[in-house]
Length: 517
Image 1 (cartoon, rainbow, N blue to C red):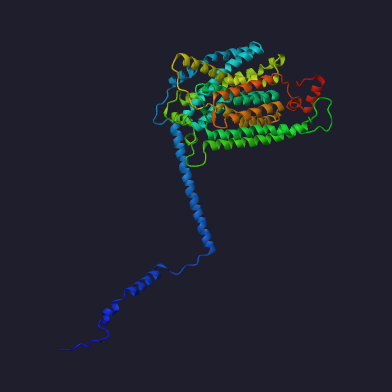
Image 2 (spheres, one colour):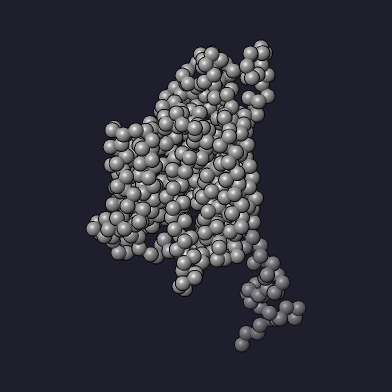
C-alpha cells in the first residue's frame, strides 16, 4: 500500500488550487479582459477624414429633409386635387349649375342693361351711355362676388379668399387700366384714391352697420387685423413719400403763375424712376404677405383654427369643407370668363362716355374720387340696403334670424390689394406702354387717404366692431365727398401727370388756363 505525502501548509491539491481564485482577484481579472477586448487602443483620425465625415453627414441630412419636403408637397397636392375634384362628394351637374347662376341674385335682372348700353354707345349720347353702363356693371359685379364665393369650395379658404378679393377688384382694375390706356392719368389717380377710401370707409362701414344693429359687437380675426394694419399703413405711407418729396422742392426760377415748384420733364423723369422702384418694393411686400397668409410658420399653421380666431370664422372654414357648392367648378370658370369679357366692353364704353363730365358742372376730381368708384359699390350697396330693410321687417313682423358674430371686413382686404398690388402694377404697365404714371398724388388726396387709414386702424384695433363705429366710418366718407365737391385739383401735379411734354402742357396752361392737351 503506497502512502501519499501531504504538505501541511497546503491542504488543497495543486491542480484544484490553480482553478480556484478569490472573488476580488477573479473580478479584477475579468475586468482586465473585458477592457482589453472592448477598449482597443484609440485610433488617430486625420482632420481631413473628420471633415469629410461631417460633410457626408450634412449631405445625408439634406437629402432626408428634401425627401420629406417632397412627400409633404405631394400630400398637399393630393389634398388640393381631392378638394378640387370633390372626391367622395356629390358632383354638381351642368343644368343645376346654370339654374344656380340664373337665380343667384335678383340683381341679375339688370343684365338687360348690357345690350342697351352697347346700343347707346353707337347711337345715343354720352350721358345716356354712362347711366346705362353704370346699371349694367351692377349685376356683373355681383356675379364676380358670387362666383368667387363658389370657387372657395373648390380652392380652399386661403386661395378662395384671394380669388374672391381679386374678382371683387376686377371692375375697378378694368376701369383703371382703360383710363391708363386713354392716358387719363389725373382721373386715374383720383379713381385709385376713391376706390381705396370707398373700400376702407363706405363698404365696411355699411357692413358694420347692417351686421351690428342686432348685436352689441362683432369679431375680427386678431392676427389678420394686425397684419392688415401694417400692410395698409405701408401702402398709404408710400404715397406720402413722393408727395412730401415734391413739396420740399424749391423753384430756382420764379414762374409767373401761382406754381412755385420745379415743373419740368427732368423732375417728372426723376419721379418716374422713384415710382417704379417703389412699385417693385410694394409688390414684394404684397407677395410676402400672401405667402404668410397661405402658409404661416409652424406646425399648426392654419389661421382659421388658431386659438384666437373667432368661432364664426372657424365655422366658415368647416362649412367650406362639408357643405356642397351651388355650381360646378368648370361652369363657374366659364361664367367668370364671360363676365370678364362683358364687363371689359361695358367698362370701355363707360370710360369713353365720361366726356360729359367736362361739359357739365361736375368736377373731374369729384367724379374720380366719388362717382366712378361708386360703380363698383353699387351692387354691394344695393344688397346691403335690401338686407337692412328685409331684416328690419323681420324684426317687427316675424321671428328674426340669429345675427352673425363675424364682422364682414373683406373690403379692407380689397383696399390692401389695390394699394399693394394693383396700384404698383399700373405704374409698371405705364412704364411698359410709355405712359408717365407716377406715384405722385395730389396733397388733398393723400391727406384723405391717410385720415381714412388712421380711422380704420383705430376702429379695428381691438379686433371688434359695432354699428356705431360703422356709422362713424360712413360719416367720415360723407365728409370727404362733401369737401371734394369744391376741390379744383392741384395744378402742378396735374401738369406732371400729362402725357405730353411738361413744357408744352405748362405753356398751354399759361396761355389758355386749361390743362387739355
